[in-house]
Structures are given as structure tokens and as C-alpha cells.
Amino acid sequence: MKISVVTAVMNGCATLPAMLESLSAQGHLDVEHIVQDGGSTDGTLAYLQAHGHRNMVLESCPDTGIYDAINHGIQRTTGDVIGLLHADDLLVDADVLTWVAEALSNPAIDGVYGDLQYVARNDPNRVIRYWKAGAYSAALLRRGWMPPHPTLYLRREVFIRAGLYDTSFRIAGDYDGMLRFLTQGQVRLAYIPKVMVRMKMGGASNKSFAHMIRKSREDYRAIRRHGVGGIRTLVAKNLSKLPQFIGRGQV
Figure 1 (tube, helix red, strand yellow):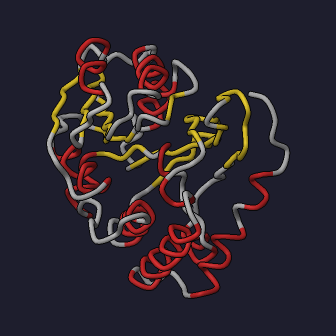
Figure 2: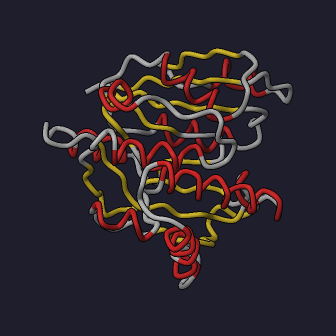
């Protein structure tokens, strides 16, 4: 099973080493690394060319935002399965892609996901938020549930059937996409009850109050668009994050 890992990056040189090390350490060897750079000026390209994955395919060109870059990356993939791994993320175990391949050896499964840890930007061993996803059921969508996007791996056929990410969303395109995959695309998901990805805090959705307001508006648009609820779903989605901050500590 060939797994395509897509990285959309813009000026990510500071965090690339840990991400690349975690990808290169994977025991599953049939992997291609599709890197979509938005025109970095901080040494990202030089670092990738010198230290990139052995099966890296790099392209650098302007884009209109993160979801446009992700779409370009997905369109360049050749694998059976597609997942995302950005410069601020890392795979927590050398067997993560092996877990993905084993779960997707079942032809009845379209995609897999697992648990996610958010860590401090200045200390990757300090867990701030632990997102234990739990098993999927369609009823959970009305309660604001979604799989942790950085842990999600989908068969190529899902994107052919349900489409790529909607670039009219600037922050919540991942939520909109996952709702579309799970409703229109009727994706059958398997849950891997392990931490798959560790992600640094401080992403676009929570960098400022204005971004948080925009994300909530985009979340609500996605909820209404895909018929999974209304304002109660949005409130439940936001409240569901609170327990994830309990019990934080060292990795």
C-alpha cells in the first residue's frame, strides 16, 4: 500500500527538522512525501533539498491559502492513501503509517484516524491538550464531533468521490471537508485508539480573537451546509474541547 503524505508549508524551516525526522523514521517504506511550498524565504527550500525525505517530490509556487496548497499537493499524489503532515506536526511513533496500512487492509474501510496531542511551541514534551477522539458514529456529527484532521488518512477514491477542500474557507476548510467526506462521501472510518500525531499550539484558528470569531462563523457555515445541525452543534463543538485540557503534563 503506497501512502502519500502531503505537506503544505510556508516559511516552516524552524520546525521542519522534527517533522522530517518523524517521517523518515517510519517503518512502512512505501511512502511518497509531496511537499507544496508557497514561496518560502526563510531557508525552507534549501533545507528540504538537503534533508528531505528520500521519496520527496517538491514544488514551490504561489497559492491563495493553506487549502489551495493542500489541494495542489493532493492533486500531485500517486498513492493509494493520502494524509497530511505539516511543518508543525510530527508522527509520534515509527509505526504510525504501519497502523494506517494495517487498518486500511480491510477493503470495507475508507479512512482511519487516531488521537492527537497539542504541545507547547517552546517545549514539545509539554502536552497542553490531549484530543482523544473515540470511535465514530454519524450521530456524533450533530454534537460537533469530528476526527482530528492531522491524524486522518483517506483512500484516494474518497477525494475523487467527494472532492477536495473548499478554498472559500480560510480557517475551517478542514472541518467543512470532513463533514462532506462523512455525509456526501459516506466515508467508513476506523479509529486507531493511539496518539498518532503531535502538533504545536498556535495555529491559524486561535492566533487572535478575530481569527477565533472567523473560525466560528466558518464552522457554522459548514454545519448548515452539510445539514448536521445549527447553533447548538457549534456550541457543542466548542465546549467539547474543554475536557481535552484536563490532565495535561509531560509526554
